[in-house]
Image (tube, rainbow, N blue to C red; front, side):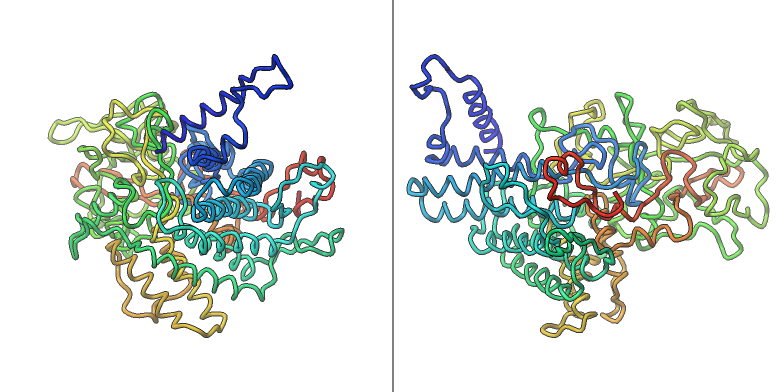
Length: 634
């Protein structure tokens, strides 16, 4: 069906372009008219195909500086959130989506108004479903804009007159209420089933929960207030605090509707107490799509619609075409997971391990499925990620930590007792006591100036496709699907909304117990430490669970925006550097130690300006429409 829709749309576009103009008083026979489109199911399907292709999912092909639909994205948002050190990542606000947003909204409005003219050609139930589906897409468009700009003009009808289109911005509150209305209409009028890659009523409920949680957070945590004094004092940035409880309640209630769809956490390979089975289960959550957990998916297929995730972010030892290691998970993220061993003892001396997997032996299986740990297997081989070899005499009472954990700038190659790799992947070798020669950094490790190996001691595993043969890993060859909404996020939304309702003193439910149960379900599936009871639950517990469960799924940035925590992440220094945990081999002991310190390689600097909580209204749009007021600070 997906390929069929794509081909049908191409045929329609082609026929529109090649129009005969010999007799202007006779309709060209090869012109596709509204009647051709709106009187057939195939025509309706083609129209939806175009709208879905414009849907702004922040998937494999999105980045803040290259925006959408770029098959070779290297500037992943994970480098901004602190989830990883990005080779090419630049700190900047989210990508613009203003003119594009109104183009999609107009498509929806045209669809709704025109479909009503031809409604008698179709089953009334189909018409009802299609209008609801279109409003779902419109709500998604408004949501994407509201996250970036706050209040924007609400346009729910087709406007062809230029003067009539010069509208001021609605308040941010009004826009989120419009999003709620569109999503709720979709919940009430869409069917529960759908074709792959299209919304149904349960997807609408899931996204309503997602949107209302964002709105509630703005009302609860944001102190930014920006008023359009020319438009009756509309609060275009910021939402009154008294709306927080209502939005949290809408989010909470929407998650309950999702439950009616029969979704559940993916547990097909999961086994109690079996870490390997739990690891494989979490891996297959992304490899076996669709499944019981996936609610809305964008499907990729080579060669029609590929991406380059595996080529850009895979480990160096499987790289071809000059790519790899474009995003390497930070120790800041890795340390959030349960069960990681210590790297130094109480005297600040390194703890020695038998192998590079030693500190992670008891880590929750979800970590292994998210990050390639040093020495762990990928595509049948251990991934070698070392920083060097300690060639000095190892002290009897242990080696004191060489660098302060916050040291961002000292290079390891300045220490005479450390043999490290050098630039351009040129390896330094060390002859071991048994006569074997060992690479200083392994096959995928950190190099002094080469940006293709790991800069943090880890490689990304999540969303990589382990089934692609190494020889086929290249640009525009990946076809793993993007799960934009899954049931785990719904549970986390329920937990957060319920907890915040409790904190706001709201009655009407056993909110703390429900939040506890939702988080506990996710932790159990992940193989993480279970909480003893709801008394252990707090705001940070829930947020930490989101950071772990949804890492690298384009959720963390917007979580940090809506929680207004970017400012807290840079309390003392406008530049924050991320940390790595780098392995060093000690030949005399045949052991390994790990050094945790600020990352010395790659673009680890992170700066956040508070004005970035809202993106600037594009200057050309303000020039065209003087009724638009700019966001603060721009």
